[in-house]
Length: 465
Ligand SMILES: Cc1ncc(COP(=O)(O)O)c(C=O)c1O
Image 1 (cartoon, rainbow, N blue to C red):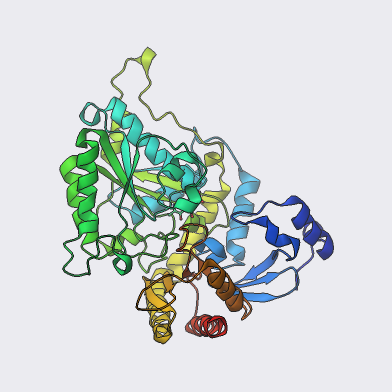
Image 2: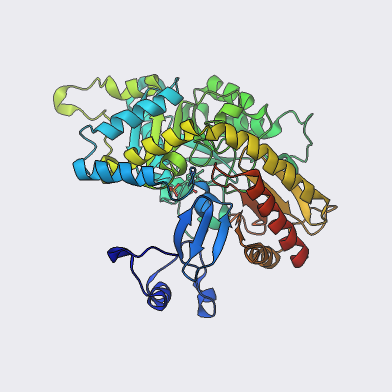
């Protein structure tokens, strides 16, 4: 039951019609609401969420977009935020504040090769900061003059703002929003199951990674400043690259002075069974962006973290005092809120104290093993994943590997939901390929809950096909 406090009180029917009349929901064609009620979530505890009609669901998505790492209903996060807000809620990030200092130190403890932390409010924004750093460095650092272009990978997602979208490899998210920002170039995706080069791993010579060099040479190495990559492509369908992929990309980047920006927005904070997604691979990023799991989404927080040599470009401003323009001229109003860093400190403390990264690795392996059993079904084409981050790709048949239709995928999602389990899917990302179901439960999930999720998916599949 929902606990009713003054400001938490509501009338159910008023809220249902209020939702229909006033809210414009994310990523939804709204015609469906003419004859269907939108689900309104009112409460969460552990992995369970309750909707306004009192129905309970086991959430296998950590809040829909893989971000509530420590589960719902953590009083200690709310209490910490409450105390900090009473003491000092806000002052612009031009000044320091205690939670920001403490959390920056915590991040750097987790990223010993990194030196400086820049806070903002969303994954998109964290990536925008990284792009601004690349662009400004291409103006002010003599050794990087003109290196303003940024490569991104097909099927990766880097955010909703126009530059972040310009660097996103998902047609459905981008279509109609052009013209895009100049200077972003696509490189191929790296999923072995659907290899762009018709190769099979091993023995493929890492052509997907080597294609990065082709694009750098085509564009001109003197113009390419960075490449942005998700350690494991998330919204594009859960694509863990082969282990040789990153070392190959790293070598190419080193050769041409191209920085690696690792977008850990989804993979960070234990999602994949290591604290950072890129730790699964032999790669040494120059910048790391993060959001989502940073504060377990109890508060909005993101960060752009850089190595010393990048920070130094901005520190050592050669211009004279009157002309100073070389410092990083960027500000985000809410980068000065203290509640997000407080929530992040407490969420990270929970992750450490409850060994949730290890749990993600162990229970994640169990989740993958259980999902693998679905491969015996005719419409399950591929099962893949790392830690508590898995994907199941649905096909019409295993000979052609043709994806099922969007309608079938929609019906399947509905049938799983009817079992009381919320799973995710590639959502409005890849036309004709939004057929990958994804699993990214809170890191506190138990093996029993894994069993419940996989049983619901099996029943859903059997009902659909
Ligand atoms: C890998 C990745 N980067 C960046 C973003 C953008 O984050 P936000 O929605 O907080 O702007 C997302 C969002 O899903 C993401 O998955």
